Length: 116
Image (cartoon, rainbow, N blue to C red; front, side):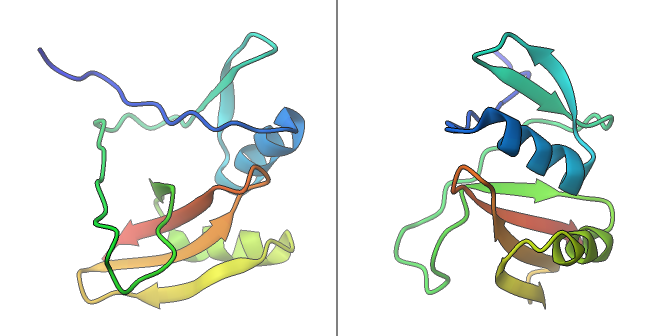
């Protein structure tokens, strides 16, 4: 058996606000909308991944989702210009990623990153 896709499911009180957040910050588009569930996607095709984070790490809090982007600096600037609170500053990490954290309107903490 091969995993073909992993999709994060985010419970949101305001679907419109949450859809707009991902659309405006990350240029995602609605791929499917059934009214009670909407799936958003990017134009890129990447393999499915799932990260398991040990709960005793020094880096708190742990993000709910990690989203790799082409240019993290562009997305960071977009977040700042949108007035989104930055929960963890734009940082070059020793393991080779540049990242920052923001929370979406549903309260999910996002690790937005690019590999060096």
